Length: 205
Image (tube, rainbow, N blue to C red):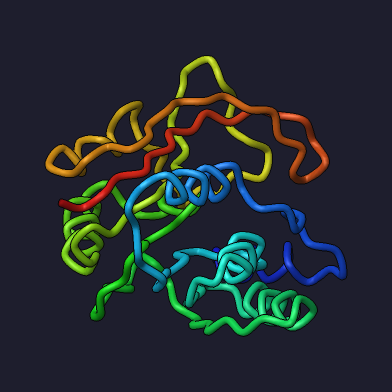
């Protein structure tokens, strides 16, 4: 099954597959921003899903562009934003093919970048860094492979988990504001399982 079809199926229900609460890295990002000299407002969410983080950022007065491969996910993103009285720009695109062409203050993604094939990652992260404004931030949460954690029951065969610490190597020349590895319980697909993730928030000089 194609990834697009898979996510359209996940997002076709009335309920929100991932819920409406923002991700932990989205919350951490806004907490950090409140403590530093930061004046940006333009944010792109790569792989927004059904919009839980995109709407959260819009509530914080960010100008948000939400990108996803799933038309159903984008429809629910717009519906959720409308329910909250917010406006969010959306764009249907695949992150494997998508390259930034304009600058942003924040480039954000959670649980999506494992779809980037390893041989594309250097190019992609250089693109993200190039199109981040000076003093801007890249905030990512990526799945990492651990031999003692079984593959998730709803894992996509087209995904390529990162190695522990790999995400940091792309940001050696930026200020690392936050970086952590976590293992958490998940119940997506209604089957209990675990994930390992690396989360990073880095600031461009």
